[in-house]
Length: 272
Image (cartoon, rainbow, N blue to C red; front, top):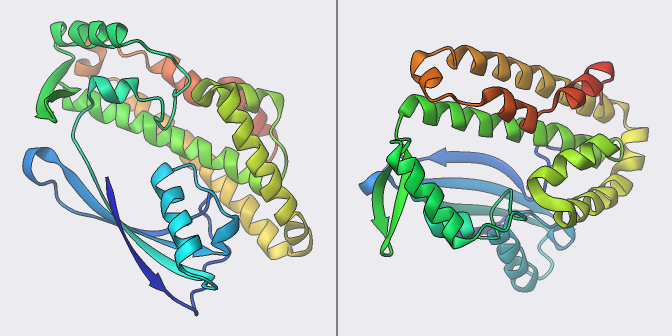
């Protein structure tokens, strides 16, 4: 759910930035949860030469099309995006094939309902509210919810390492191709690889000629690798909690899914 506000800014300087996929997020302002735990926040983005840019987020692509047709000749545009999220997750969310990841997994309604019923029975999830006549569920134990959220955050850092590398430095190797396909499926993964191929062609000369920019990209990737390992180590410390142990949380399997050991070893051997 979102509402957008556009601001033309002819003097806006937004390049280069550390964020990976255009449009580039410059700032995020989060607001306190309101009724029923619904969260709202404000994101500020900046576009340049927006006609050539595509985002993996559907709502941002819709906005891009409006900008393309409604702002003739405007190349530097700021975008304020107001969004809110509902707490928990519904059966419809799990069946939505436009999810951020795992959209290629063809779950059936019966499979989802059985899984939710099982988790309710085991008291691993709880009903948080009903929206549009459909119940929404959340993880019952706050400590477990925090651990799962940490896993998601780690995935985002690993994605940024991969996407930054593919955008500026080199094409993905076979191991990285298989890793991304786990989350997006083969078809979507190939679309992502193609998009970064074109980005890489565009930036190739800049990376080669501008040594300062090249060093900053490499330095940024190194910092991300340190950050992701530190977060993984901290996550294992959290999982020593008796509450987490009681759930038999499969942390090893999740970490191997998010950042496989083979991929970590490849990253350790080189700066890319």
